[in-house]
Length: 384
Image (cartoon, rainbow, N blue to C red; front, side, top):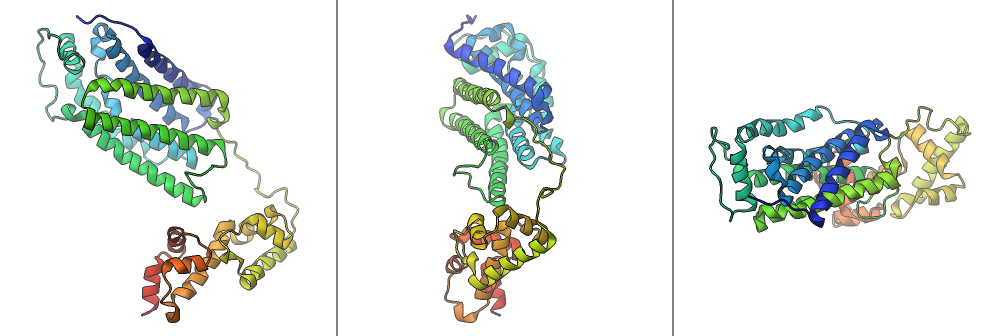
């Protein structure tokens, strides 16, 4: 019989369980509950708490007193990445994706599938525990109620789970790339506020934990490596606790400002028209958009007009932001260059540089967004 024991590592894992439960309750019933995305964060924490608790019991040996809890947390393998994806989508977009509940169908299916294991005797589960964690110890007599794995899923659960979660990590990466491009941000450069920095750090820690999971599954091949995964999960939970205590605003609902955006602006309609005219003339005559370093403050200084006044004019008169305003001029000139047969010797990258972009990929993305085709295809079609 296994002799239960406690050490520093076991205490570290157990404290992670307590911390995860505390944070989940805060997100569900405390002030953070008002932020819709925190519901997904809370359930992610509960899933981690259930998993950490099982690892603690197995590591310390106390599982022998709670044998029916063995492998209870296994179905949560199908919620980690989906919950992270839903949390990030809801947190950044401030809206819950439609039919979000469909993402938990694999989780519900596997719970039903695992019922075949859950109904087995304590002796059977004790032997399963020994097989995974102490294969050298003698097994005890047990009987089996039906087969526990008719489809062979449980025998390959780590591989199946890693592939399943990998799909969601791909969706997360694609969403982050789209979000940063849309907001003119760089994921690997300093971000403007704590919320975005929180998202970046949470994703990096979670991705590192996922990569470690994949590594130990395909290269280490021992369940004992669950303990290192538990340590990583505990570190992430401790980081969340630190953020909740030091920067609680990151978890709170953002205030909705129902007042018009420029309600306190003193600009008259005639002043707006004058600014818009000056902006148009400046772009057409001096072609400032060709400067890839041009910024709103520089433009404001040139016009001797406050930056916020230019932003207001662009938003209200053209329904664009500063970058969208520049993009229109840049793409228009690019179309002229691409359709000019005398300039066919210029590469797409050279044209991108001429109109104000410092990378071909950024130029391609903006050009396609405005014209619904790529620069190469546009040149080919206009040269016919």
